[in-house]
Amino acid sequence: MITFDVRQYERLGSTNDEARRLAREGAPAGTAVCADEQSSGRGRQARQWYSPPGNLYLSLLLRPAVAAARLPELGFVTALAVADTVDTLLPSAVRASLKWPNDVLVNGAKISGILLEQVDEAVVIGIGLNILHAPERASYQVTAVAACGGLATVDGARTTLLDRMARQLQVWEEHGFPPVRAAWLVRAHPTGSVLRVVLEGRSLAGSFAGLDEDGALLLDLPEGRRRIVAGDVMI
Ligand code: BT5
Image (cartoon, rainbow, N blue to C red; front, side, top):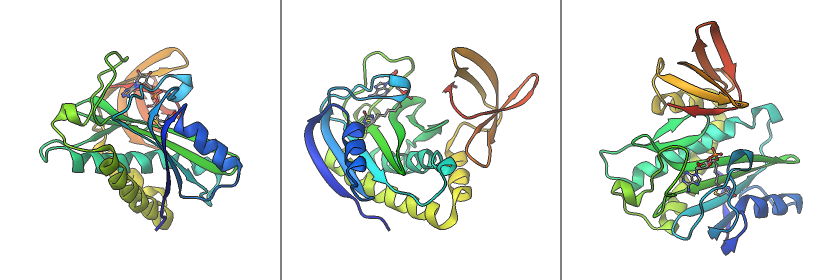
């Protein structure tokens, strides 16, 4: 199982940027960059990630020996590890669920975001997990562990997450994507849920028809089934 070597910072612009810099310098797989707060935390497509002190901001450097086309699978691996972690932090009646491609939700509200970036032959996986604070305004419902009745410290959450991540990575390395895809589907919106997907500014509404073998979203539209590889999903 992989072990992580954590570099802890008080404040960074973005833990992903620091991990990318280390990747280019040749840092080994398992290098982990963690910051108490970020001044320019990033989401996908240059969106901002609200990053005050009190939440977890972590970026993991991996050097997986797989074709580049398989790297998006790591977003699903990570989402499962985050969901497992959130479950340990929340009251037992509450369980984390997943929204394509790799958002982690509690009671329908986003508690974590994952940003996967390729740097040469390495991958940086950025994870933001709200422990104490969620942004006041976002384009959808947001939450934090504390707001869901959970109890956690940032350090405790990080330790649990690194452990769950190592376990999920081991499953993926040994058995490939099928068990990851199956576990993801168990926690996701049920087949047939109506999803609205925003793609390049256009919005499509359809019913969720599962994940393709590579993790692409399958959406049934009036004109037939469509495979979606990038986009934002609203349930
Ligand atoms: C994501 O983007 O969900 C990926 C976020 C990854 C953040 C981590 S933190 C550690 C590492 N270092 C970085 O610089 N980034 C990574 P996306 O799907 O584009 O969602 C972004 C949207 O989520 C924003 O436009 C807001 O609407 C909302 N948002 C921003 N901050 C949030 C927060 N703390 N909690 C929940 N939602 C948030």
